[in-house]
Length: 335
Image (cartoon, rainbow, N blue to C red; front, side, top):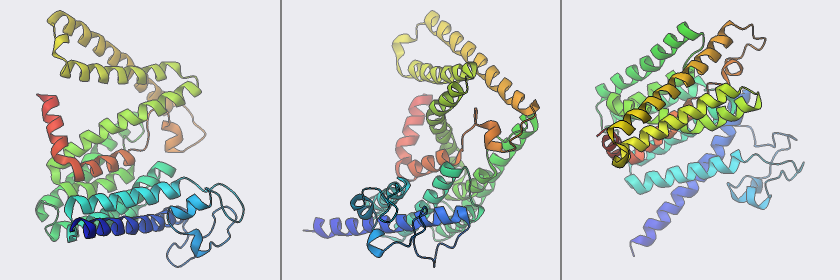
C-alpha cells in the first residue's frame, strides 16, 4: 500500500519538473535575447502570436500540435520538449535518490540551473554570467545548510580552486597560442561546481568532463574538418580517438600485454599522438598568425575547440548521482 502514495509523489514531482522545464525554455530564449521572461506572456518566436493556455502544457501541447505552431504552422524547436522532459527526469531522479527532503529541493534548483547553463552554451556558445552567479549562491547556501556532504570551508576552497584551475590553464594557452583553452563562462561555472563538490571530487569531475568532451567532440570536429577539406586535421582527431581506444584496450585485456607486442603498440600510439598533436597545434598557430576577418573566438577555433560547459554539466550530474560508481571505475582503470 505504501508504494501507491510513493508512486503518486514521484509522478507529481515529475510533473513539477516538466512545468519548471517549460519555464526554463522561456528563460533560455529570452535570456539570450534580453527580453523579459517573468511577466510577458508566452508567444511563438516566429509569428509572435501570443499562445493560449492549452498551447503551453508541457510535452502534451507539443504532441497534440504535432510539433508545429497553431498560428503559423512553423515547426516548434525540439528544444522545448527535450528541456521539459530532461528537467522532469532530473527532478524525479533527485526524489528517487534522496527522498522528499530539503536536499532534493536544493538539488532540483541546482539541476535547473545546470540545464540553463547547458542549453545556452550548447545552443549559442554563451554562458550568461548571472546564471553562473546564481548557481554559486545556491550552492553556497546548500553547503551552509550542511546538505552537500562537505564543510563550508571545503566548499569555499573548492570554489576558489575551480575558478583558478580554469583561469590559469586558459591564460597559459592564451599566451602560447592566442586562444583560450576554456571560455570565461567555464571559469564562472567552475566556481559553483567547485563549491558543490570540494577540491577532490571537483578534480574527478573535471577528469570525467575531459573524457566526455573528447568522446562527443571528436565526431563533430572530424565532420567540420572534412566539410572544409582539412583532411590532415580530421585524421589527427581520428588518431586521437584511436589512441584512447588502444589505451583502454591495453588496460582491460591482459592477453595483449606480451612485452614485445605491448612495446610495439605503445610505440605506434605515441607516434600517432605526436603526429596528431603536431597537426592540431599547427592549425592553432596558423589561425593565430592568419589575418582572419571574422573576429569571433568560436569562428576562429571551430576546428579544434567546442564549448566545454556542456561536458562540465554532464559530468557534474553524473557525480551527483553516480559518484561511488565513478570512483570505482577510475580506481579499477588506474590499477
